[in-house]
Image 1 (cartoon, rainbow, N blue to C red):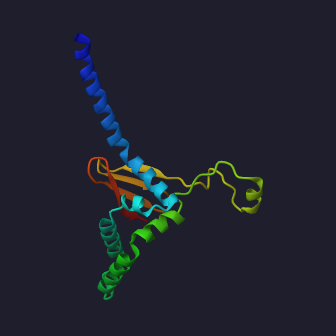
Image 2 (image 1 turned 120 degrees about the vertical axis):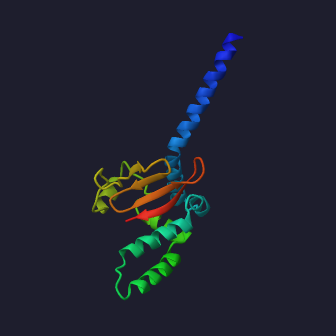
Image 3 (image 1 turned 180 degrees about the vertical axis):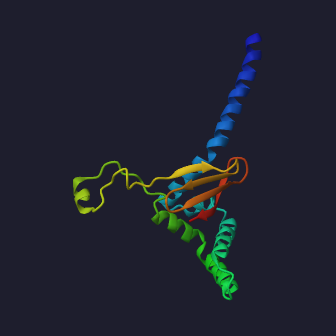
Amino acid sequence: MAKQGKRIPAAALAVAAAVAAYWYWSPLLVVHQMKEAVREHDVAAFNSHVDFPALRENMKDGMAAKQDDGALGGLGRLLGGVMVDALVRPESVMFMLEHGDFAKKRREQRSDETARDSSTPATEENKPKWVTEREGVNRYIVRNEKVALVFIRSGFCDWKLSEFRM
């Protein structure tokens, strides 16, 4: 009976460690799921990881910050807001990520025929280089030289794409 008493705290510790690990690594899982959704053109799976209202607002704020306060500044903000509303839709965001290097598969080997036809062979230098970082416990950023994708925690282990940083 003494062994059974020691197993319960060990099992509780193992469960707590597993939950903590899942909580910590959950943004990477979401990024992977988004890449797969883009590769497979699965709009429903992709949309489940994007907070479109927050994405629109962040893009409007970014455009407003770039506008000067001249006579046409208000008109520019208004037109920019209309343009963001029209462009930030599930299809357009998925299209941008699909045709960018977010979801490109890395090909380790290429056939000689393809390598001869291509002007840039597949090397480590021209493969997409994505870097991840955390800003606190509720913000996860995936970036390359061109763009940063900002994910915000939504619930315990769910993350939503809510901002693009150019």
